[in-house]
Image 1 (cartoon, rainbow, N blue to C red):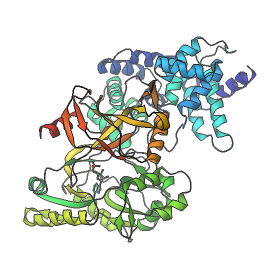
Image 2: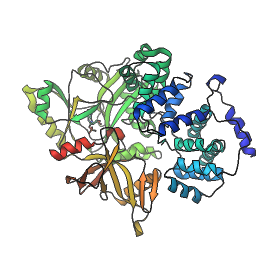
Image 3: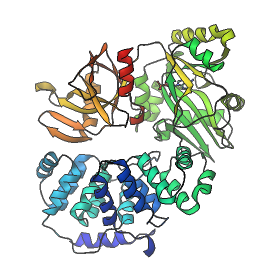
Image 4: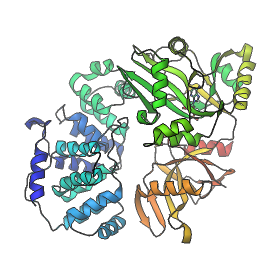
Length: 572
Ligand code: AMP
């Protein structure tokens, strides 16, 4: 009890708090419960819009994030880093039951949040104080977890969680635990939040959507909407330091057809690596993936190339990082190992040398996304100092129907050099963040594979009992819901299998016997021999002889393949 008293005093000592922005966490919990009670998007929008319009503008950035079940924006380098095992331990110590009892309850209820609610109802120990948790207290204390490092970091993180939970009611515990694992399960995505903000403050959705695409900061967008309306939103623009959702490519039907349609095209080698957006803000250089994750710490070599090759002015450039050995690109898997690396980075820098191919510039002292590609490429060429094997511009040819063979030659020569194919881009077009449009196309040689998300799995038997040996894969339908399509059992070596099983362990939502259901997070590229119709899977289709080609940690749920694509491939 003593420790709880001390802690509560610490929790109250919250610098950001002022009386007027203190709102009970219980109110947010009511909103979560209401959101959970309906599947209708319009109703969810209504609930959120009522809530947002009633909140102090200073708190709005916090509640928009928390309505998404997050405490850090995606692009933040900070993360909570708490797995379900550690969280279950914290729950068991606060509630006063064994870890096994917590695990049983999680199995029965289907998730940690629902299990916490049940366990906290039964909790023997009651807190000394009856003062309620506020939204800020929960938010600030969860954020504190990420800053704990060094000696006994795990146990100090545990203490913060235990302290928060010891002050929570059963329903509060349900949502605090889900927030810690970043899976709120109330069916709200960024789109619903944007609709709710637009409804709450009467601003046009297009204006709001564009502001969000450019800043990727819903909290900021919400606050500006409330305080300054559409005029304020129109002033928001991209800023070095905050990543922008990348412009995406559609499949080209063929080289000639695509160039004929565009009239004039820029064709470039398509490098098979990971896409990065590199920002310079003042003296800081930051590297983000296409999922907007900050990987700056893992790629000091890229940062050094950039320091040497580009002017020390604010900019955002985009390119592809590949690994080369003796001038040839080598396996894509190496790059993922590189960018996920947290230790011994110096050592792998020598073993796995990176080359960066830049292909676009979005900002150079001023935003450039509205400028046509032609101008952006000119700017890029004028600011980059090339350096062999380190930093290059994407190889490019300018074509019309007059010299279409130059594009065809680029394609075969790119394949010969070990690259993936070509990109066909319209030089008159602006950069449109987050959109998969017809103005940037890709043309690849290999038969298409599918990018699918793992939603479940089955543990092996006997010697392989600690491996998840078979993965249940899903794609998305029109409304973004996931639909299963295949079980995939082969393709990976034991080391990768073990690593995947361990990662799956952390995101288990339900388990029954050897079968588990997991949070949709891990994306695998699946090759197969044929698409067939099948009532066995939710998508109505199944894959024959599916094989895992590689883990696609560079992709997000927005990038996975769709039922519509499989349908068109089946017919075609
Ligand atoms: P995909 O990932 O299959 O949708 O294909 C588009 C991807 O190709 C982009 O997201 C980039 O990661 C990659 N890429 C490789 N080379 C280029 C290039 N020259 N221009 C644009 N994207 C490229």
